Amino acid sequence: MAFVLNSIINIGNYSFAGGVNDLVIKKNIHTIVDSAVLKIPGAVRIVREIPAIRDALGFAGLGEPGSAANRRAESIDIAKLFREGDPVSIDLGYNGVLQNEFRGFVRRVNITTPVSIEMEGYAWQLRNRNILASWKKTTLREVLGQVIAGTDIVLSPDIPDMPLINYRIPNRNGLQVLESLKDQMFLTVYFDDNVLYAGTEETRTTATGGITESMTNLEQVTYKIGYNCASDQPDLKIRSAKETKVLVRIKQHSRTGAVTTYEAGDPGGAVEERNIPFTGHPDSLASLAKNGLKQLKYDGYEGSLSGLLEPFCKPGWKAVIFDARYDGGRAGTYFIEGTEVGFGVNGGERKVQLTYRLSESSTNTEVK
Image (cartoon, rainbow, N blue to C red; front, top):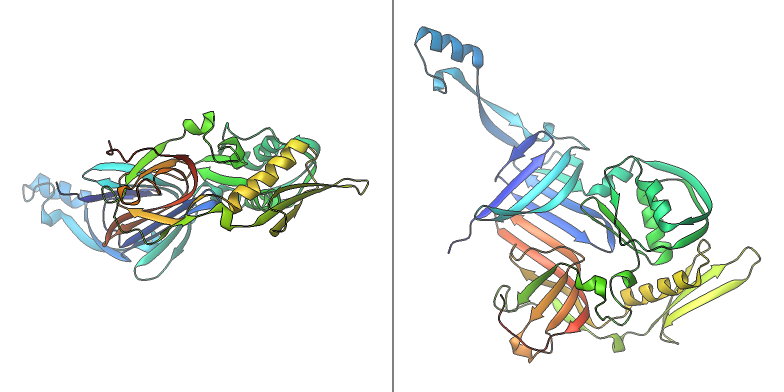
């Protein structure tokens, strides 16, 4: 069976199928801003029907609607059709069966040949939204509610009930607030289209990598090496937690000057330290330390697995891997942290970034 690449791209008031020179879409649970870069021809030749001429010719019996006599060809400068903030939707697939790969907004139009259009996910709506606020006692969810107010963004129901104390936003835009929470607290912050999640990966997986009840409800994709993806996967490497020595240290400073320290990892290992003055809940601090350790030390993969656009998957899904060549050693269920989709004149490809192992796989059965 032949596989024919298809695309439908909507930008602002315009929609087109095909004509894509190159398209790259990047998403990752450790990167707040989803991105896409689209390259298309800088000028196109279109034919417009001129209603006045059409009607006159029709009345005189000299032409039919749609005839060459009542149409005019003209060139259109593509770069002038789009502007920052135009909504974007990109669907890709094969043989007319398409999946939505990206939703967001135009960030920048570069007048090049071909025209390059830079796009961002829903994080774009937070760039120009400045926030000045402070709380003596609040929660992570309440702060995020303030950040997204007035936008099309909604909060994930999985955001943990994390208390914050003496938290202040000193007139920053919403994206800067999210970046600050992510960097200062080892939080995982990302978008799934317009749904914002912020919290620890502990809410989805256990610290040891086992599957929790919430993780079993994740969407999954199945890959069989050499069957629905290439046998040669040079960018996919096994990573061992035993070979990584790291200590995550979380410090909380009280108003009296007392310092409370929470640690997770290997004594004597490379130290990753954060000072967090605005949460005083012991469980929250301990979870942040464990979440930081999970990002730095795990058994699983690093790198990416390359395949076609199908099967479809997203960051935050789980991938079931079968590989008969390694006697089950690489088989198992892994967490997908990111995807990179390429599409254009050279074909379509999805690179799936895998991380820690969620469970072992007992057999290399056929993919269904």
